[in-house]
Amino acid sequence: MSTKPVASLSLDLDNKWSYMKVRGDERWRSFPTYLPVVVPRILDVLARRDLRITFFIVGQDAARAENRKALAMIASAGHEIANHSFHHEPWLHLYEPEQLEAEIARAESAIKDATGRRTLGFRGPGYSYSPTLLRILAKRGYEYDCSTFPTYLGPLARLYYFMTSGMSGQERKQRDLLFGSWKNGLLPLKPYLWKGLERDLLEIPVTTMPLFKVPIHPSYILYLSRFSPALGMAYYRLGLGLARLTGVQPSILLHPLDFLGSDDGLDELKFFPAMDMPAAKKVAIVDRMIELLAADFRVLTMSGHAREASTAGPLATAHLVEGP
Image (tube, rainbow, N blue to C red):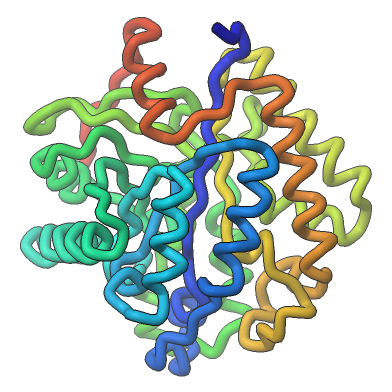
């Protein structure tokens, strides 16, 4: 058995329309998709590394026929399937309880129809979560949540989105907690249990750099690599090194745009950082990041990470506080 420490790798399968929707681009309503293009590309990288990861799937995509083949490919390749909500709205904290439970249940149903898999893990779009959401997940038998993003930089990322969009005041109000508040930087990096629910719920945070709480997942490394690939990779190595030093089990988050570039004809998504890089260059950087992670850690799915965390010893706990 490997003596390497544990890590996990997951991908939020946000589609073209969902990025447009979050930005306030009304053309999202026709549900443009790039899943048939990007999913085989992602699966090829993972197959070459012989890795199984967790895909957080949006229910609306699972409900549309044009995406079914791509989603079936993910399940057939043996990857874990998890829930990323139905409508992909990063303001789940504004939902009424009944509306929120219907959102979760509708996504579960659509994803199971498309992939044959029951979802036991959840991540909120835009790291959106609330006490109500956590209660619903515990009630519905979820094994883990992965919606927390422990960084102080959320407000800066949100400001960038606002500055590069034509959102109305109402749209900005809906998104006033997109990527979280500065208080998210106070959240733990290691897995912990939410208490005060119908049953305890394991939280696995998206890993940020220990001590500094700055993001280390590929979307940020790719942005740095526009200026200096060596700097981007050195920054990432520092994050992984600090994780090992502090006993943090990295949970690294991928996105489809990490595998898509300037030569993929995605003019509507030019606002997203590093979309001026060709796809092959981005894929090569992400592949190297995965290689470095696998060299020092035993890379698991999110459910595998959850099992390891639950059996490794007593976990820290957190009690629900009203508010997102």
